[in-house]
Length: 421
Image (cartoon, rainbow, N blue to C red; front, top):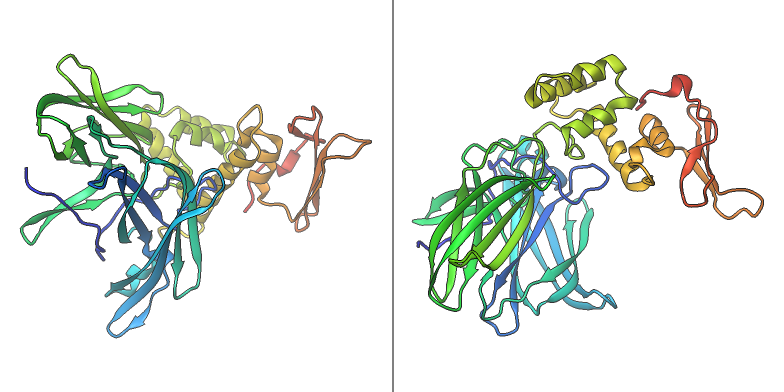
């Protein structure tokens, strides 16, 4: 097999879909990042490849000769999970050049950066921070991460999804898709990974794709000849066209008796350009329109003949609400589902947050001007007071059960029961 070189350099004209993964408030992420486990030649260590994908729109470009330049610094920190002690920290800087000023505000053009480090297997807290040297703005994400162990048994590295490939200097170069958005794929899912085998052996490699209901929608099995060495695999899977939602790709290595020797999986998403990043399920998104759409408008969308027609009607509804139709952004569309995502994150109890009384008020009117909380009054049940000074409105929520289920004291919402920016 030809040697594959992972290429993560910057392409000024390279377009990627817009999506997000770790973004509970519904905004586009300031950057995407992934950490890939690979087997290391160093005993008791695992090689980690840290890859970042940063939208141009979140970098500050300045004039630099005949071009425009942005500079940023990346800091990658590994801490112990239990006492949060810093075990490793690495910083490096990148500089990006573009020829066209229009590209400096692009949300679909990206700068890529990567580093390799080696670490002992275990569970750690990983923090990845991007600091824009021009705007002085800093963005960071932090998560628990498992550094996997690759011993002398069979193994599979983490999956790295690929946007495209190209030939540079007679070598195949792979351009990663760190956002993992597979919307409108035409030539199939592309994925790179490594197989590890302690012996020469024929085995089966099985690819399975599951939807968010854990239903298998794609399966492919191929016979491969393993060597007692690292086996680099780059596969294109002719899966069905993916509708809006989240999916899980599983790769399993099996012997002739179909016993699993090794297995790995990774989540992907399918979100179309132009949809807010908080919209992951079309049917759910339509249900959540109850605070902005009339019953007849909702029925029109729900009664579409199929999902494609439903999506078309859904998008047409929001186009009519767009205050800036001459731009790519629709601030009403994006803000509405940002509020929905925030409500789901903050006000969930028995029901989803968007269905709660607090969620209803927050989605329709936005953040209150002031909040007063009274959780421990001895002579009353816990309650909150939300004031909207510009509307001259006050809402009181009471926790009648004492378990955090706050209900609107006066549930009659009347003419306020409609979305406002």
